[in-house]
Length: 239
Ligand SMILES: [Fe+2]
Ligand SMILES: [Fe+2]
Image 1 (cartoon, rainbow, N blue to C red):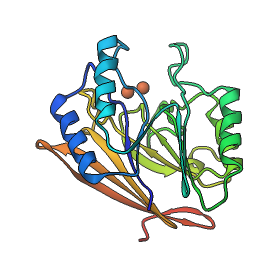
Image 2 (cartoon, rainbow, N blue to C red):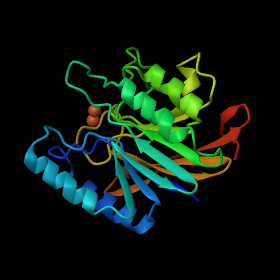
Image 3 (cartoon, protein in one colour):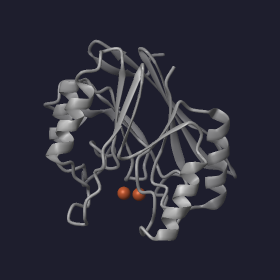
Image 4 (cartoon, protein in one colour):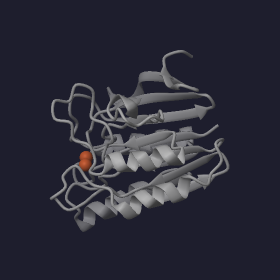
């Protein structure tokens, strides 16, 4: 059963050391199949921040994917695409070459392989966001992901955790693809929620997103969302 620990927005330079330490210990104990890291490793891209991020990543258990990167096993294919650009694109952007790579990597894989695309910037805004900031050319990337049979999209950047169907925001996309956003795992730059990460398990046709959050000096389960993949698309709730 594929289990993915989805962590994001580490922001070394603004990290909270006890939270980082606890997260390493927890993931070491839980031993996920893959740790997917969806970006913002450092606060200011300073050398010492990258060194601290490197040490943290080296401490993670098992396979680790940091965008960009790829990870492929028999029943799980994960592709990380770098959406970070210069400040002119504050919401990030995907290149035409990357869009072609999404198609080329996923399209040949059989239906039974669970296909996951990881980016830093999101494809859909958070619920109720008055100023939807989604990744540049995201719609075109979604068309490629749709054609190639992608199942799940992981991202961060918003420092807010939520999940939903891409079709809720992109009305002309017909394939149901699930979005899971992760909060900031270990940084002090939290918004309206504590440090969190997503623990994702998939056992066809069920997918569970457990949000693990930092409270009173430990990580605990904040929410558990169950999705079921039906012919008509991802359906929330029914176990
Ligand atoms: Fe961030
Ligand atoms: Fe970001």
